[in-house]
Image 1 (cartoon, rainbow, N blue to C red):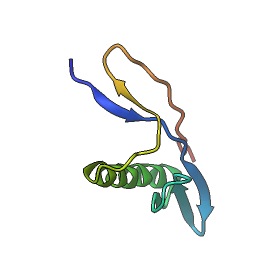
Image 2: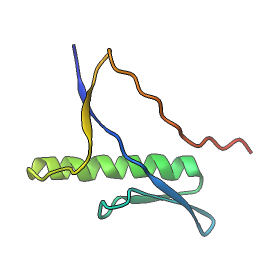
Image 3: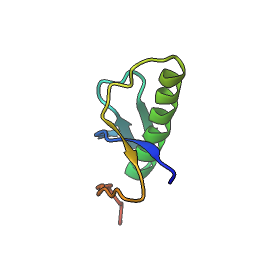
Length: 84
């Protein structure tokens, strides 16, 4: 059965000029912009993955709650979906 490490983290989203800024508090460099909330959120997730991959390669602690996500696990997430 294939497993993958999953990170549970809260991403802060705020208005930034004409767009939005998403950031992961307490992780240096973990932020991204987007024209929409969704774009900023998904851009930030990509940045976080890159940062954690870099830290993993260097043997650095990720500093977050990680768990193995398998077919027997389930989780619920809330994401903003623009409808206008």
